[in-house]
Image (cartoon, rainbow, N blue to C red; front, side, top):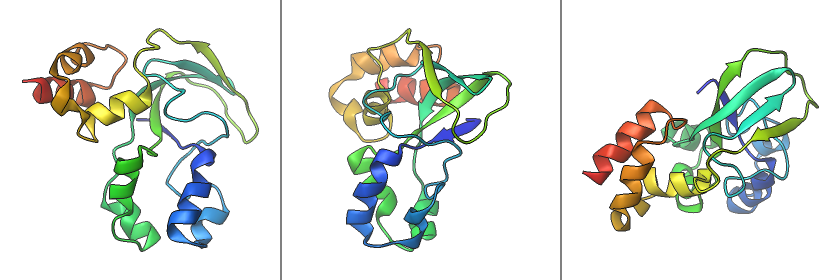
Length: 159
């Protein structure tokens, strides 16, 4: 969980949901270190590797929201809305250290698990989708690029 990515695409939704909130006027409103347009949870997969600046990063898990989002925005229920909508972002692990600066491209290099979108995994692990799909959870528990915590959670939910 070295780098938190959040799609700038979702900021419009949050403006509609919250109204004109000053935090949404700049980057990092949802605690992200990296953001871009055009890459959302349905289009990114666990295990995807990207070149970001000179670093090599890999998607390891979705972001599970907590009370801090409600507190930061002064809006009770915002973290629940993140779960309901799946607008959570994700975490990258660093495979190769490197330098990153504003404006660097996020270039997809490898997608070994296209069946495991961040949105699908988030729905199973966080948003309650596991109740109808225990076999899929068992498969997910063995997905090596998924963070250890989320693999353990998948195994517990499948039991």
